[in-house]
Image (tube, rainbow, N blue to C red; front, side, top):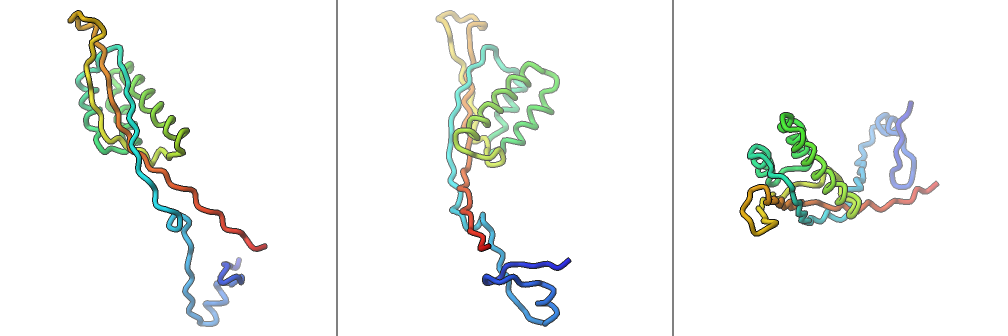
Length: 156
């Protein structure tokens, strides 16, 4: 099997170049390097909880500053095995945000990271009964959009 490459508009067999003793500088074009650099964006999501999250779940969420999406996903899967209701709620929340970003902006899951997480207790009524409180979680997700590379025409 012979290895061929396109060099200066001609098909060149690498074996022939090596046998002839010619030194050639082959430049491999990388489409990612030629495209414009990716742009960074922030998107804020406000999630309201009907039940208070446990202290353990809150500490996990607060540790997510500047954490990539896929690490946060693993944290939920492995660290919240004891509380399946919280695990399910947080997985659904995290996946919904990531799928929204992917559909709306074509961001890759690997280009999404969690910038910050904050908690805000809210009152639904004027009474101070603890069952009346609803927590609001604010996620700020940072994502990058890479422009697709331009297709080069193949001269056939």
